[in-house]
Amino acid sequence: MKHSGKIIFCLTVIILLSAGAAMADKSAVTIDAPQFAAKGTEITIKLNVTHHGNNMFHYTNWVYVKVNEKEIARWNFSATRTPESEYFTKEVKYTINEPVQIEAEANCNIHGSTGIAKATITVK
Image (cartoon, rainbow, N blue to C red; front, top):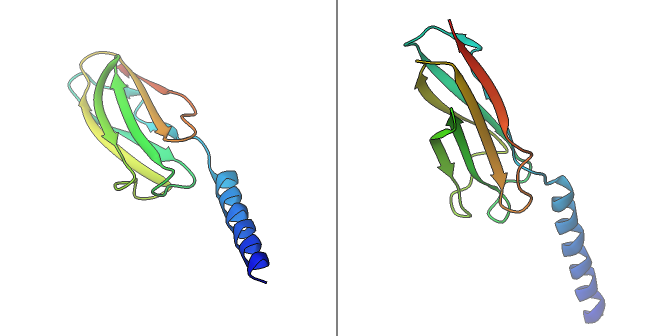
């Protein structure tokens, strides 16, 4: 009887871990920013990050945003400081003085990233 209890416990753990892995995915980011802005205007760049399964073992471990190939903001997370939810937003202000190429990426500590998101802002 003791032996069958251990087997049931082990099978339950395996099923639960498998279900969690099946629901997990790579971290993804989308960029919300205006397509056009007047020179000298301060704009808000909003990053929408998604990652199913954020917990202390499996989480988005970093997010960054670059403007014209220069990193302007980065958020690092850890097992003890995970993102607030599976869907979260980060914002950064930026003053437009020239045409802007924005790149952003988020990364899962286990599965990686879906890739770099890109956006362009044209100066009016």
